[in-house]
Image 1 (cartoon, one colour):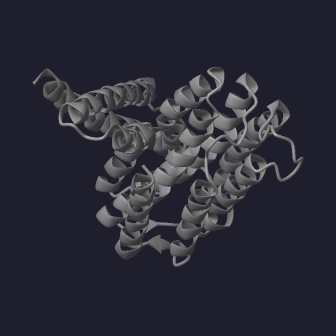
Image 2 (cartoon, one colour):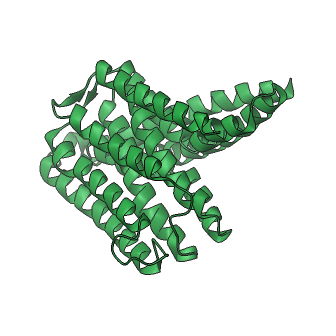
Length: 318
């Protein structure tokens, strides 16, 4: 009974935290004339990837390569196929030409780079991602953030501020920042409690532990992205939802794998060719369904069905 009560409270916290995070992020974007996509990719995308960063870093410290790399691969698959699939079902997602030519192509390239390194394509050594590779990844991520803001400032130049609107109360900006920080903290904490209590309930009901690990644990670290994207979709801010997922995926590969490799060099581990193939196929599918400038509900259903098919495949292996 206590687990169910905690589960309900955690779910309410997730919804509340996601709403606060999205509102604060949009307010900051409006104030500084930053596009919703970039604010979603940078502030929301990085913030909601904190659980993945903690899990992968801990896995690297413990020498558990499957956790360090598998967490990133599984999270990226879930982000694209499940989160964007559900988001598109709620409201078709707008995709700009800039998203197609730059962000989605970057996402495909870094995904392919991670796969090539994981299979020792460049050096043929048993260590797939060493500390030098990881440092290059981190520098690459910093460059992505810098170029994203640079391109955004050119595509969305700040409007001239009139005398009437020049004096914007500092409390408004401070309140927006507080909303982002507090909302993110509530969101991540709520997700942690939700996953823990859901696992306890599943075990009490006699659900197979393998199924729990594949669903609740593997997808649990992506709950912040799911909550933030769905909240943005309900507010019809689909660019923020898209930026959240694309930014999170790029962050997962370039920064999380880069940082984890500084703690301990990463090898390919037990992650299979199928897992890596699905990760890159998911991003390519996202690019293809975005070519018309929007991800329709039909495309969202296709992406969600693909994720269910992948999940069924994983379960069948147990």
